[in-house]
Length: 424
Image (cartoon, rainbow, N blue to C red; front, side, top):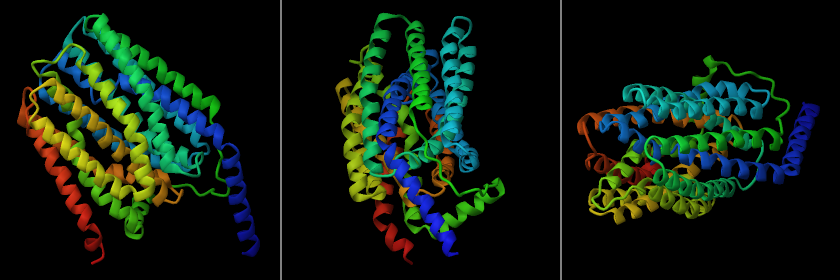
């Protein structure tokens, strides 16, 4: 046992030395990947671009709800699939790259849907949602894998790393939004979206190449045990039972997930204002990303100082403000305030979720922690968009924003009383 303990500590020490050796290289590689990929994801944004693209094909509100249903309903459960794959992978980097490629296939098919519009709008809608389903599944699989990749590449200041990563992405997103504005103003529909989707696809492929050649993976030695799917749910149950800190985080994370479906509706509400222009999508995307530049660093700093739970609570405060403004919005200018606040809400949720999975797991089975919160959030993310979409039928009304407002308020109340509740 003494020799076993000695060699185990030696392996861990050697791993940390290698992580420190490649820290700068991996840090810069991931910053470049974040810059390139965010340029791509901005041009396929489910918050602004895709809802507007769909609304130009059909004005049925259920299709806007379907974007959220597909995204959350497929991406979150897909994380379960990547759990076993991620834990058993001999190379986290290689596995992540394969999943990235699948996502690029989805982007390519969305691009092809613009050509289908020339034949039949219904065919275009069908192809789009099939393509988006592929994108959502691959994204759901890649998110836990990305957390795993970070855990073997970035070993210190994780909150600040995610803040910087998202900052680089936000800067890139602003440039992408300017390109989007140019494309939407210069060309007619659907050529304008076709050009944007093509540019997004090319940047996404370049991001994959950067990770392939730039990232130096530090493999964890001495862990030959393979995880079976039959062991996954008992392991998740054990995490919920034993890891009280992560359990506290999950309670408020699950509740706030009920508000996430509302995001695609804001751009449609702003675009319906009498003084809205043809550049609404690009302008609001730019404002949201400029906000993200600031919010990424602020929320990353807050998460390191106050922890993931308090970061979610602060995100709810911003959420309350933006939903109230959305309900009483009468002019296009108020939409600018809304999209400046969305950046803080989304970055707060994203950073706190990533940091919680990495820190509360202490770098062990991080991918399972990530998939666990995704799995528990999924029912809210599927059922609520369906109910709201059926209620609204055509167009967008304030029902969605009032519901989101209630969720934010409830989340704050529960987060305040959670410790006394769990200590009983």
